[in-house]
Length: 160
Image 1 (tube, rainbow, N blue to C red):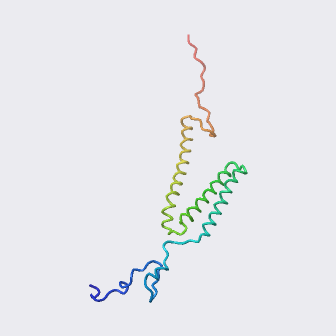
Image 2 (cartoon, rainbow, N blue to C red):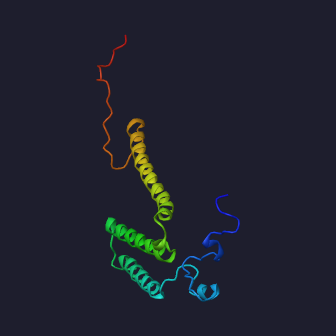
Image 3 (cartoon, rainbow, N blue to C red):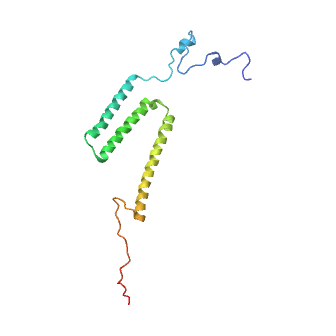
C-alpha cells in the first residue's frame, strides 16, 4: 500500500472533472458545470456561407452546359465543380474540418486508393484490348492495321 489508510489523493475528494468545466472555489459543482457545453458549437454563419458557395458552384456547373462547352474542357469543368462541392460538404457539413487528422486519413485514404486502383485497371484494360486486337485480329478503332504477310505467289503448276 503506497498510501496510509486515512490519506487520500487530493483529486479523489473532488468530483470527476468534465472536459472544459472549471471548478470555481465556493460554488457547487453543478454551477461550475453550467459553463460546460456538450460537443462542438460552430457559428451558423459558416454554414450559410458554405451553402451560398455550393449554390455558386452548382450554378457554374449548370453554366457549363448552358454555354455548350464540349470535349475535355466540359468534363474537366464538371468534375472540378463536382469535387469542390463534395469536398465542401464533407469538410463542413460532415464536420471533417474539425476532426483529428487520423480520422480524416481513415475516411479519405481508402476511396482515394480505390480511385488509383480503378485508374490502373482502366489503363491495363485498354492495353489488353489493344493487345487482343493486335495478336488476334480483332479490329481496334484508331489503331494502325498491319497488312497481312503472305508467301510469294509461285507460278501455277501444270498437270498433264
